[in-house]
Every structure is written in C-alpha cells, then in structure tokens.
Length: 328
Ligand SMILES: Cc1cc2nc3c(=O)[nH]c(=O)nc-3n(C[C@H](O)[C@H](O)[C@H](O)COP(=O)(O)OP(=O)(O)OC[C@H]3O[C@@H](n4cnc5c(N)ncnc54)[C@H](O)[C@@H]3O)c2cc1C
Image (cartoon, rainbow, N blue to C red; front, side, top):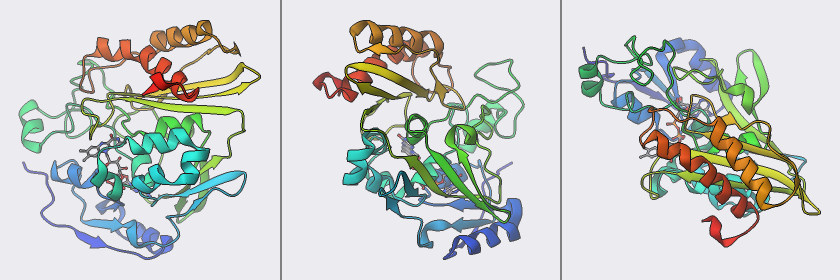
C-alpha cells in the first residue's frame, strides 16, 4: 500500500490569522510548511500525506530579530543562515549562532527556518527511510506499525529530537509563542517538548509557532555548543550538547548542560557542580554527564562511542565558552 500523497494544494497566506483560518478549515488534512527542508523529505517518504500545505513564508513580521529589550524576540521565519550570520546574535547569543551555523549545509540553512527547526520531527534509523524500506521491515510504532525496532519490547517510540537549536535554547531559558484560534500562549521551551518520539511537542494541529523569546543573558553568562556528526558539511547530530554558566570572579554558578539526539526530548544533566573554575569542576561535570546520558540505537553511530563522546563534548564546550583554542 503506497501512502505517498499523489498531489497536494499549496496555500500561501499573508497573515498569521489567514494561516490559522486555513488550518481550521482543513483540519488534519493540512500541514504547515516553512522552509520545507524536513517536511518535504518526509512527505516523499510517505510519512505524511497532506492534502493542503499551508506555506508560511509569505507572512510578514515573522522574520524579526529584535535584540533591543530585556527579552530578545526572534521570528519563526528567520532563516537558519541569517540566525547564524547575524552580528547581534553572534555577540549576544554565540551558542545559538554557532548551533545554527552547524545545521545541515549552506543551501538548507538558507531555506530552513528557526520555527521549522524547533518543530522538526524526531528522527530514527527505522523511520527516516523510503516507504519501500519501511514496508519491507514491517513499519514501526511511529508510523503504521506496532513494534519499536530500537527497544524491541517497548511500546513507546524513542525516535530522537535532532534539532540543533533546541538544546541551546533550553540553556538560554527561551520560550515559544504559539498562536491558535483560541489566542496566543507562551510556553517555556522545556515545556514545549515531551518525551514521545511519535510526536515530541505539545503543539496542537491548529497552532503556529510565531516567535521565540530569549531573556537577555547577564554579562557574566558564558555559553557554548558542540555537535557530533558523521560529515561536518551536512549531517544531523549524532549527539549535541549545549552549555551555559555564569563566571564571576573566577567562580562558576548556574551551570547548565543540555544534551540531545539521544531521546525524543533534550535531556538536562542534573546535580552539576558550582564553585571556583578548575579542572576538577570540569572533570566532575563531565563525569556526571557521562553517567546520566545513555544514547540508544535510534541514531546512526555506535552507542558506546556516542556515550564516550558526551564528556568529550562537554570539555570542548567549556573550552569554547572560555575562548580557548582547543574548542573547535
Ligand atoms: C540533508 C539534511 C541535513 C539536515 N541536517 C540538519 C542538522 O544538522 N540539524 C538540524 O537541526 N536539522 C537538520 N536538517 C533539517 C532541517 O533542514 C532543519 O531542521 C530546518 O531548520 C527545518 O526548517 P524548515 O523551515 O525547513 O522546516 P519545514 O520542513 O518547513 O518544517 C518542519 C516541521 O515543522 C513544522 N513547522 C514549520 N514551521 C512551523 C511553525 N512556524 N509553526 C509550527 N510548525 C511549524 C512543519 O509543519 C514540519 O512539521 C537537515 C535536513 C536535511 C535534508
């Protein structure tokens, strides 16, 4: 049974209200598209068969990068390329600019958007395949099947959050603004994601992510982003790690480490140390991250090696945040 849509209609609304009206009118037959760099691949693979694609790119006002106030505002349609290259973002939110610059390859970064990245579907070696491949395997829990080929016994999908901006935005305390026919709600990004690979966000089918809001970091805040992938020129993460901490008078506080590409939701490392910046403090944080993060076979790359790379990425992130050359 071939599940790829034969045709779909593309609607191009000019306002958020018009886009919401289209979602309302077409219900579960409609899907949103921004840059299309993820959803079009998934449609080709038969993961979705929308009758209507609501293309957001003609909507004005969602490309804003406002770094003026105490809370920065980034529009959902800001291109990943523009986020990576924006001098203000590079200065104020260097880990976000770096993460954006490490997404996919140049063409995809120009087409792809921040909103699309935050709403990126989860990924797994058993789902991001052609329909033919998945049919031969007997499908899986995420689409059309009943088995999880990763856990073998589990009834829950463990496809991995694979978006590079998500862990960074967690460490920056970001929130997302969601518009729907019921009005606008704002959620901490942490509350936007749930630990379910089938659908890892609380975004309702009739909601649109319009803006990302990031509190202006204190001058003492240091931040970094590290990523592991097969080809540095284009690939999704096999593992990624965002780091942020305050450094004041040589003392580290509010240390935050978020790791992703391991489960359906990014994972925050718990019980991290505080105190004078020292090799011992970094060692302790690295050991805790290694203990708490256990990759699965949902993503390419040997799981034991990916786990061993967790403390390595954490050390590199410290070096990056402290401006040391070893970071790259
Ligand atoms: C070869 C390749 C490599 C890639 N590598 C990476 C990588 O390294 N890291 C990474 O993070 N991504 C990667 N991607 C995925 C993708 O290019 C990016 O995540 C991109 O930012 C997605 O944005 P988009 O606007 O194209 O999303 P789209 O494909 O348009 O949409 C993605 C999803 O988000 C939904 N959506 C889009 N905008 C909104 C909105 N405003 N409100 C609500 N829902 C919305 C869509 O309905 C869809 O479900 C890669 C893709 C390819 C093809």
